[in-house]
Image 1 (cartoon, rainbow, N blue to C red):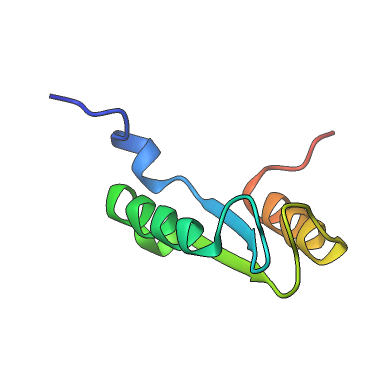
Image 2 (cartoon, helix red, strand yellow):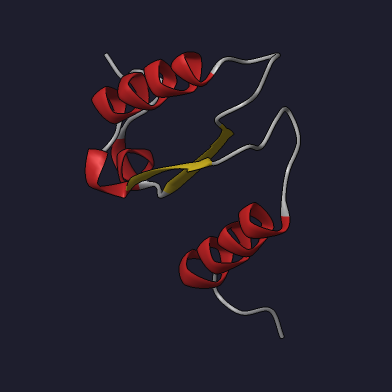
Length: 78
């Protein structure tokens, strides 16, 4: 039987970001999530980035990493 993650989806690139001071979703939960994800898809395509001092929010550094990830993995838009 086919699970929800099969075929081409197993090779999808994933960027997961987490602040190390997040009071709402502890960093440990992000770490557990990324390990589960790596067991479901190609672990070489999973990137987990943490941001020092960041709470349940985002930062310029994180947004620049997201932009780099999008630029690398999505074709340019005309």
